[in-house]
Image (cartoon, rainbow, N blue to C red; front, side, top):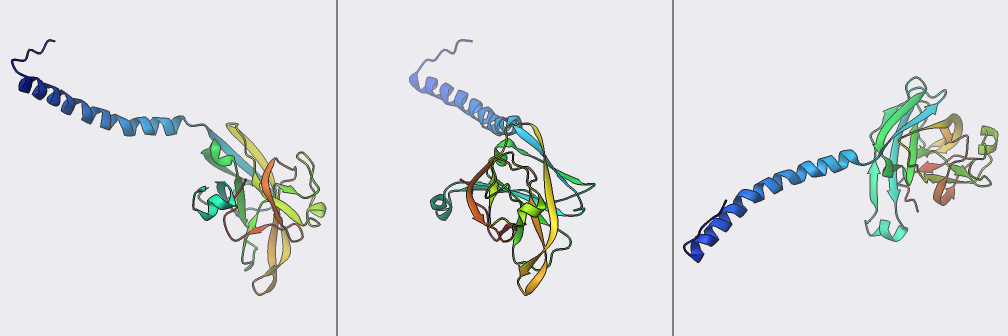
Length: 208
């Protein structure tokens, strides 16, 4: 189609009208593209198998960065909803990138007032990736990694060991939990203090 103009003013009016018609369409398409991009982002079905911990509450947190970034509020922190172990397992469907720098909090039905959240140990001092870990070994360890290096797979199953132990609580000795992976996983720093193998958290674990 040819638009004929008899003056500069008429031509400018035609251009302005055409721009008005095009802009709303581009604006409306932008949110749709954003939704499509999020849907296309790689996701991982992450399943934890946990024996003898029916009803245990599991929550995930992902936080990658340095302490300086954390102090400046520049760390991207993501936290999942809480899910309960049913029939020996619990599954999360999460963005794959959230597995990097992942920490796992566990709350067992038997726990007393510990003053912290039991945290899964991905690695204990003295172990390398792939090493087997028994409960008898775990309770002798003094340092542990709360941060997982993560995966790039669409589905992964991770066995967890969660056992009742006695710990120092807010008001004396109380029932608590020790939580760890029976096969040492790839981990991220830092290695933190653990008490008789028990790793507890009162804040977000910043992984690096």
